[in-house]
Length: 145
Image (cartoon, rainbow, N blue to C red; front, side, top):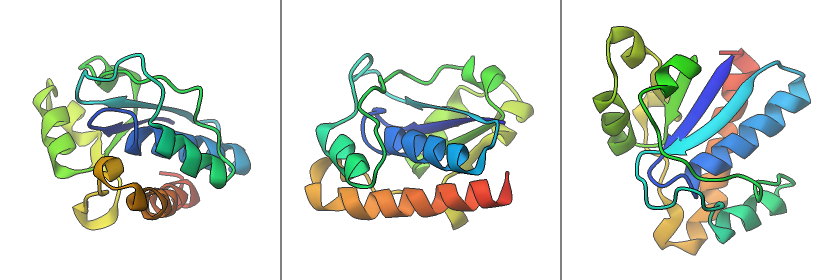
């Protein structure tokens, strides 16, 4: 299984999701590949936001070595499932879909197509966002889907 996590800039939510999912996959001994990307290009080549790194570290996960990149249409070929953090990410990823098979790979990370709040403008959101993402990733790994 190859999974891609996608948010806007690939410095807050999707690197958290990548780190959490890698951690859970390793714990369960699953042979999955995990990556993340952003729909925007502002942070290409940058590490995750320092607040995301701090919260992940507080939870025992190291995301400091991750590097932001932008989502590309070729990602549809490289990944089995693409999880987006919100409705805007969903729309932007689907714009790059080339066919129905590409579109079928795109899912909201949270159940019932809920948005993962973007913590960029509120430091206090990093801990609850981590928990939301952790719970969603745990559900995915528990169900092996």
